[in-house]
Length: 421
Ligand SMILES: NC(=O)c1ccc[n+]([C@@H]2O[C@H](COP(=O)([O-])OP(=O)(O)OC[C@H]3O[C@@H](n4cnc5c(N)ncnc54)[C@H](O)[C@@H]3O)[C@@H](O)[C@H]2O)c1
Image 1 (spheres, rainbow, N blue to C red):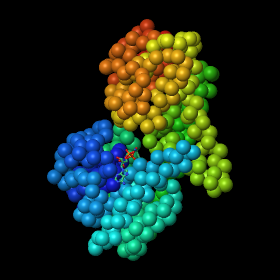
Image 2 (cartoon, rainbow, N blue to C red):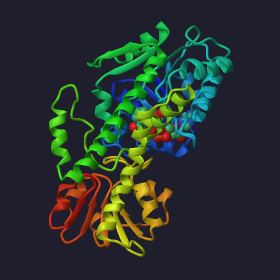
Image 3 (cartoon, rainbow, N blue to C red):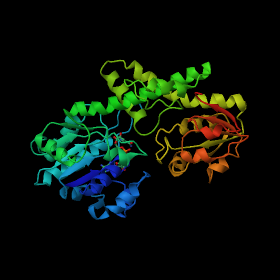
Image 4 (tube, protein in one colour):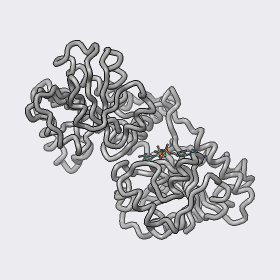
């Protein structure tokens, strides 16, 4: 098929490259010329293991442009993969969705062939059938599900393992309301050997939010239990190894630590809370999930102050800035509240991350960045905020290490404290 991808960030770049690998012709579109230029020259605009290789390998099937008009005219199906960040009150910000839909609508108005629009961005239940549909219909002067196809296909990939998540998903969810889009998505995913769940569009949208909200809940639960276990001098990891053996529970997402970050869990939990409140429902569990997550990184600093009571003018080393290993994404990284609080308490910060220093520097230019993980160890004490494999190879002997991610090697010969262990 001929596919256009609107938005070449983490989801768009991966989705497009993977569809190209499956033999489809892919037209990438972004409003950011730097991303378009990168993809056009076979280079990934983001760090994701294997993505550069996939883009280079399939370059004959790939085009990239800032011209939405050209991309939609030359393709049959468009995946909308633009960002859906949070407003300051936690509700979902649909600015990019609205603008992308206006762009698409303008092209649909002039396009003779029937086109299909698939919303892959994470949007609250009802967004596609109300807001997206309304904009597309108004601008194009055509009718959704009649003159053009419209469907939802939420994305479940995890940064850091996004390619294998694309090719071997647990399930594919498609929300449809017209046969045209339904048939196209069936064809597109026909080679995938996994459960395919076909629902109404609002249900598909809700499945995405509830999945993320539940995973976030699991993490905050593991952290709360970890805080209790630490006080009781019980190993929380052993506890969860036993708990996870119950097939009703499952062991994933039970690593106690300093909480979840990234571009999805925090904002999706906030958006669901805001939506629930708008509907007059008090989402008590979700509010606590978010509160536990906000407090958890700060526990690392309370532990640090046990060993370094006065942080004024102390140099604190920070290992890990990405919100998790194998990505350069720093959105809602747990390192951010650590840096803010360290600076507020008068410390200076020497930070290192194998991939995310460039992105973090744009947010926090005022801290010092180390050229290697080793040089961070010269600081007065070290905090570990991301579980990069590289951090398992350092010599932490005689250092004060406060660990938010359970790096086993950091316990050898050091003055060591783990956040939940
Ligand atoms: N990052 C993830 O791990 C992940 C996983 C699942 C779902 N999602 C969801 O997918 C969506 C995209 O997430 P992301 O992390 O890829 O975001 P991102 O911010 O990395 O990328 C979005 C891209 O869209 C571009 N854009 C904005 N408006 C545009 C327009 N009108 N036309 C073309 N391009 C435009 C931006 O320049 C940017 O490059 C969000 O809704 C997110 O919640 C993300």
